[in-house]
Length: 439
Ligand SMILES: NC(=O)C1=CN([C@@H]2O[C@H](COP(=O)(O)OP(=O)(O)OC[C@H]3O[C@@H](n4cnc5c(N)ncnc54)[C@H](O)[C@@H]3O)[C@@H](O)[C@H]2O)C=CC1
Ligand SMILES: N[C@@H](CC=O)C(=O)O
Ligand code: NA
Image 1: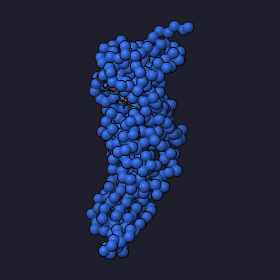
Image 2 (image 1 turned 135 degrees about the horizontal axis):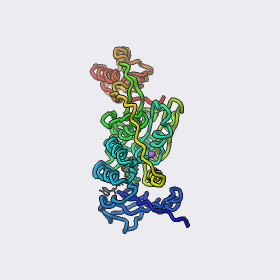
Image 3 (image 1 turned 60 degrees about the horizontal axis):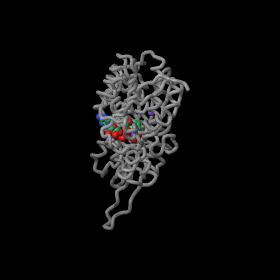
Image 4 (image 1 turned 90 degrees about the vertical axis):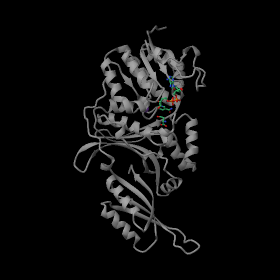
């Protein structure tokens, strides 16, 4: 039997992901050791409550509530607590004590990444975070390493499993957002506070991380435009279906040139209409997919489990093996590259297509009035679908529903058009404005 030196691994947090990391390590630890050329000794698991129920059994002697002491003397620290504090302080302590760190914490990387990467570089340690974006799907390493020699133009991703699960259930089963969220929470997909999922804070954090890596530019979380899915209605889902689309929460990171000719980067997250023929439309349940367009490589699609305890544990363990191999081989960590330092452009600089649904008074000339208003704001109309309801019993004419599809227009022009539409008499209400992506 081969005798390896042991690397000391400390785990912080034993929730959905942490407990599965322990289970997988117990199951495959010997195999991973022979892959690495060193034993991976789990020296302890920091938890908040020793007696809390867990999704996998953890030997009681490994459990401690003293995370700070556990870190001391560890070669590799795995942080799976989530949130900003105490995760940030514990990771800083781990790095300064010379440990490599593996984390799945996108909230922390998106908000304090530069500070953590700087510390890792200063002490010659490495911070791994493959699980932080799109769970089990390898996407951090491909962007950081495999595509480091290419020029990424655009990323279009479904990067939040919970919201994809919810929108999919609304689309395929007519379930309500609330019911579908309850199931996603039971299945371990949702964040500790699911507002992070449904209001797209989580997806925005992932967009910031992806854009930073893809464009070699620090993209602060505050610069990511964000709209969640809480305003999406059953009627919008149904209308999208009838028109050949599906609504998906998308994270979009792209190189953009604004009206003044300034080259920059846009990172944004919102629910959008995706044609049912697009590969992203076929991403169901809690699955994620990241579509990357690169100059030389062309289109690449990364697909798989974006959430779930055991699935995310796969990405964590992959990082653990990388960290362990680095310990065996030695050498300094690799710094994050932010050499491009591009400006982050506001949402108004972005152009896309839109579907606007209006409830209008069904009078002669209404279409001409509305078409002129679009034209006055520089937004070109591509399609108009009109549906007229039945008049009410007292003979009052029913309003007509107009669904107007536009050609590419800037967000700024579209916003001005919607404001103008809302103020004219013939328009009773603007019932839905959705962007169209992926066509
Ligand atoms: N669940 C998922 O599908 C995915 C989760 N992630 C990320 O992985 C991380 C962990 O997520 P989950 O396991 O789902 O969360 P969770 O809420 O199930 O587990 C976190 C655990 O940390 C414990 N904890 C909190 N403060 C602590 C402290 N001071 N010391 C020790 N333990 C403490 C909590 O009691 C809880 O058991 C988060 O950053 C999350 O965003 C990333 C990808 C997918
Ligand atoms: N809550 C997140 C978990 C993974 O990052 C999600 O639903 O995607
Ligand atoms: Na990943």
